Image (cartoon, rainbow, N blue to C red; front, top):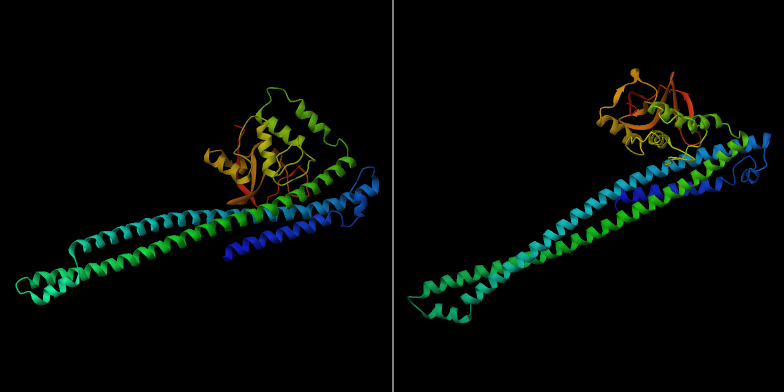
Length: 353
């Protein structure tokens, strides 16, 4: 197996092993795991202790899920390359088969020509016994030798072309098999890691809700009470604030959990606006293509903030007064917090205009 395929499969296996460790950790970590597996009825110090343990497990599971996702993305890229290779090899195999058929056809033509021009022992005898016609017979004999050599070469070329076609077809099949194995291994590992992470975050969410029941009721009610003619900015901010306290889950876009781009996408979807789909860079590229990027110094509430450079890793909603609403990372809930200056992009996306 090629080095690239071995590397991707190795990463997938590593991720799968890590996931199994994390999954085991949900029932074997500190803080009396037997009690934390079922938090109903817990309160006070016991609930706080379990919440601390569950948050730690969720952070670990979230990191493993993110790593498994990266492994999957790498495997998908490798699979795409293998698919392209298979298509190229299939094309080359088809071409080689055509060349082989053409070579065989040419050999058949030469053989037919030999049959028409002769080339028997009788010709040799005629050369030895005749006088005036000897030169003509010698010409035919020399031509026969050339044609015989051509026929042999063409036949050999045809056989070689056919072997090449068969070999290329085998390579194409092997490339397709590698593609399927790589992608499936990585997809399975990612699915398992994501399930483990989601389960961990749901336990945290239940514990937090039990510790502070109805803590986000005011924000939720404010969103419900928005007038029908509320502005895009007001709707986006009200929706985002109504999600405060909900857990970060990679790949989630509500209603019970969110990742960073899932929160921004859903907030604008609440206004009927499409900001490009689920993905930080997808949203940035749409804003850039539509001329919606403005300098950060001119940021207004409802603008999207991006973190990273070139390939962005995080997006949040500017809520005004130097604050933002975000789904920050595994182990952290949706929150409104001060803007972090580190890695902040110098432009914002304004989809509210």
